[in-house]
Length: 406
Picture: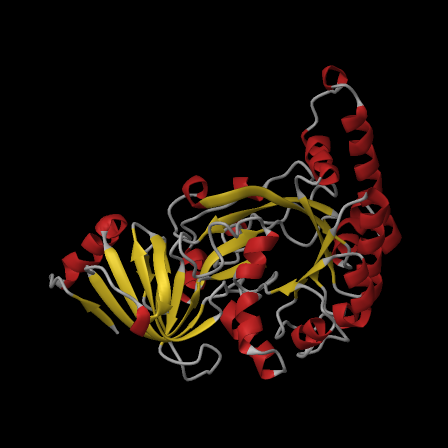
């Protein structure tokens, strides 16, 4: 329930609140706050938001509150959710050629491609996922090319690609599933897993040789420049790999070139937990309710998240890639399934808030309800992982953009 101290006509209130939120103070009272930060879980807590930033958080009974322009009452509050691998904003809701720009299937080496140049902040799916609590997402090229291009991180405000951008070129996307060989095998490209891996390795060696030359001797090459960023550690390396053997290949390539791998998809990651941990890799978990993909996910389990936690393997949540309308899963529901299958609620919240914020180098701004951070906040009328609960508000930078799913 939202309580506004200033009474305005309904058609005026929304626009005024949005336009003046940067100068207002909002106080949120909640029965429980999952901060994902230094204060852990707070019972009977409150959050003060001023100028789009969190200025205070704690137990309400011990806080002194400033004069509030707006007061909100919520059941449970969490930081805004972060989706660590999605095609939302590059692929659209209608699933027609005109709104599908996440996957270049005419080039097996797309290292020079940037998802930033495909992202449409006003695509209706951006508002759809925001309605279900996603305030930030690492948008990535799709699963089809061995080297697909670089991802970028956006807030889901729905303004423009440049104004919603928090970090560009966050990761180079490499794909080691069966999709690349199926896509390019009939086009003269790699048609086996070993050929896909060789394509990736060859491109990385070529970039290494290019970067070793004096700067005045290098010919301009966008692809080699981007891959050199991976080798230097400036751009993360994400390998989409679902099967145990594909995950092992990703770890092998990462060791060969001296960088840490992020394993995306990872349906069978729990079968190779010790190797993932030894290689200091992070897992972007497949959606627990993801559709079976034949041999790619025949050993998938709803208990994957709890098994990874038990093995002390760092992981974050994602909605992955979907080829059907509406092209996106609901991150909150995938988290709920993980909780229903052994993962504790606080760990689930962290795996969609502070842990991905750290993974993408954005934890100084987002990911937890801590003083000084952006007021990206999600509100519920009950347990976030109970199907009878509802989202009552999604706030980004202190501005209430949604009061629940559309």
